Image (cartoon, rainbow, N blue to C red; front, top):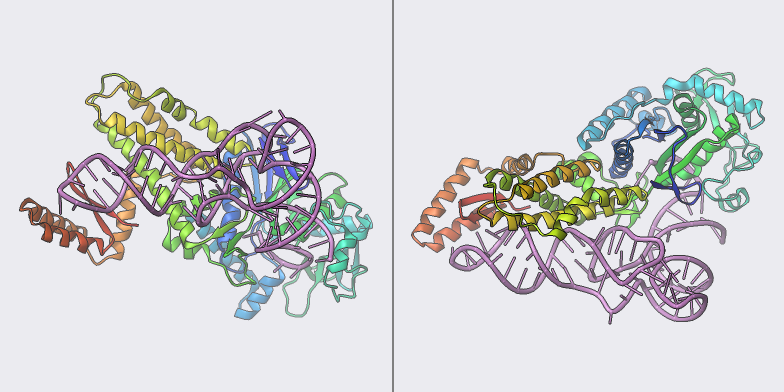
Length: 488
RNA sequence: GGCGACGUAGCCAAGCGGUAAGGCGGAGGUCUGCAAAACCUUUACUCAGCGGUUCAAAUCCGCUCGUCGCCUCCA
């Protein structure tokens, strides 16, 4: 497998420190608000990474933290007049609700910052002892100038940053680029006691402390969004390498942003959509298909159209699988194979092609391409096979196996995980729930129309059809009668 | 100002040195009383522009233009 390493600035062959075991740390949310689509991308990307690594035979130890104490949490709690702990807990609960709705696997370890205060204090002490940090008026700062590799992750030099950076007016700092490890508490703020007085940890120190506690000083992969590269991950790296005097994460994975009209979706711009907003309109698998249709490092532009495209594509995949189900059940076995050699090869190589794409830095977009290619070939095969009186056992088995493979592979992206029949039914149910029309009424109308058709009363027949279509119900006239579906 | 990413058909998106995957949309077709749905076929002599390296470039190098991001909290 090859994975892009931000630290190296290129794709590298991946091999974990301990054979067969991957240790992964991902920066989780700061819990002060509902998660938006950007958070969904983050969770979904690493969900895919974990699923695929496990599929590839690795044991994965996955740690994802919660930042449950932070300036923004304190500010929001004050705004709402609630306790900051309570606020953090509330949005952690909301996070789980959203993640469950998206089908995101739980991390193996989900540590909270507030439960690791002592680990952070210990780490800060070590940094002070090594001369890399200094207390100042109740705060503690990291002495950036003492860490010669500062900037190695984000690819910038200290001098360059100072040129354009907003100068921090904080006069407690020796250098404007120094960052805070421990913040002295102001009156009324949440606080913990420490050797430097009462206060709370700075943002970056929690990840250094918790990753060390659960994964050790040196581990395999550290991940997060591109916006975390600087300063968060740069600072983490400075803390960990500074304290441990050994390499930190060997590989850094950073995913791209979700944009709206090509602008970054963010709280400060106010152009964000929450996960729960989107899930009101679209099934989770549709959102997943949309997110995985772009390689994780590239920007992903969110739009109604894009989501609808994903919905159409997902429907097509399910239709294909449903068709295989029907065919397999109805087929009389016997006869010669009718599926062409070329198509057989395409079907049989699906897994291999999918893996090759995913092995190349989790190229889910390409992997999905292969899946859609599979849909096309399988549809073609179904048509051929369906036109036969008797179907070769070989062909039936090939189709059945292909269906299992499709769902197995798509499962690594968390899509196509429902029984096709159920998926199609669920879609009908959703529509029915939003209509005043009952299923009984629809069937009555269909009967009425069919009666008119028998009389060749096309005007009445078409009027009924148009009436139903006005409710987004489309009729399918087939050899076995008329069925109905949802016009998405 | 510093650093970085990106620019591929109407839209989205792979490809990263060997002659353009896939999706949506469009156009034809099968089916149908006509439709719709579904399915099939088709849809970039060309990869922002201009130079260069090479037997060979969308892919490597340089410049220009454009878009976005980071440098401050952010997934």
